[in-house]
Structures are given as C-alpha cells and as structure tokens.
Length: 154
Ligand code: ZN
Image (cartoon, rainbow, N blue to C red; front, side, top):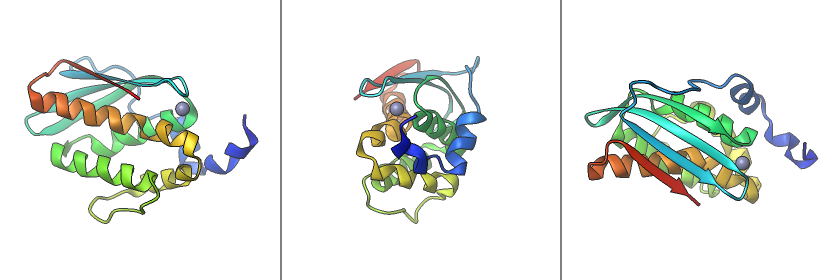
C-alpha cells in the first residue's frame, strides 16, 4: 500500500471498503450503467431500479481501488429512495467538494464528507468521483428515454 495514502483511509472509508453496502447485481434493475476510470483501473457497474422521477433501488458491482469502492458503497446509501432531482443535487455537491469548493448545504452529506480528504490527492479524485459521474450519465440516459444501458469513461 502506498504510504502516502494512509491518511485517506479514515475509518468511514475503510468501513465501506471492507463492508460494502448494496454490493451485487439487482435482478429487477431497469437501467445498468458501466463506469470506467482507466487511469486507475476502476470498473464499476451501477444497477438501478428507476421509478418515475426517482431511484427506487441501486446496487453496484465491479472492482476498483478502495476509494472507488468505498465511494460506490456510499453512493448506494445516499441515493436509494431519492428523487432524481435530489440525486443530481448530490452529484453536484460531491463534484464541488472534490474540487475543493467546500461542502454544499443543499444536501445531507453525512458520511460522504469524509471523501473531502481525498480531494487533497489529485490522482484519487477520479476514483472517488467515478460512481457519481457514472450515476450522472445514467440519469441523463434515463431522461433521454433509454431505460436499459449507459456507460461512462473518463
Ligand atoms: Zn481508483
């Protein structure tokens, strides 16, 4: 393990990496979205059950570094059962935070605030953002009327 990464492995990130939430495929998914970060080798898939203007369920599968996997786990907890508008506000808040612009007051960041520590390591920002940019692409695709598959790559 890269010794400079140690301070990133705050308790919450480690917990999500070791005990990932909602990991696996979702049989009733109506939309799957692939996300790839070639820079690090992160490859994840979001499995979404969309419901009108909301995300009823979301699971994730794939593999990646600990930051990417922890962020994917946190994403599923943050957006399941939420409206698309809320999910989009959340995505924007995460992108803003990861670019060092602070924490938004418009959404409940909760555990996600720990990802702010990752913003000090530019090479890891894309790892943390991958599930969020992948979700963003999925929502765009859904809103265009494609309810089956979408993909995102840096
Ligand atoms: Zn990564």
